[in-house]
Every structure is written in structure tokens, then in C-alpha cells.
Image: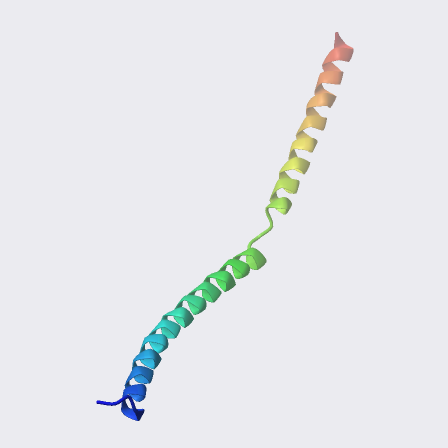
Length: 79
């Protein structure tokens, strides 16, 4: 059978089918990655900043240290 239009169409169909499936999986991976990135960004945006919590702890510790120092000064003066 001579090479003609029929054989070229068959080859084209095979290539189109193979690349069509590949690009389908590629889009699935891209969409999954985008969803993961969006979830991570949302977590970073909406989580409570830990610096505020640490700052409150530091302020509380500072007040306790000041009170302890005052008590120690009183005891030192008594001695």
C-alpha cells in the first residue's frame, strides 16, 4: 500500500491521542500544585502571629522579674 493520506491520518491520530493524555495529566498536576500553594498561603495569612504571643509572655515575665527585684531589695535593706 503506498504512503498516502490514510497512513498520515493514522499517525496523526496516534500522536494526538498520546499527547492529549499527557497534557491532561499535566494539567491535573498543575491544578493540584496550585491548590496546595493557595492552602499554604491562606494558612500563612490567617494564622495568629506567634510574635504577639511571645511579646505577651515577655511582658508578663518582665513584670514578675520587677516584683522579684523589689522583694529582694526590701530583704537586702532589712539585712
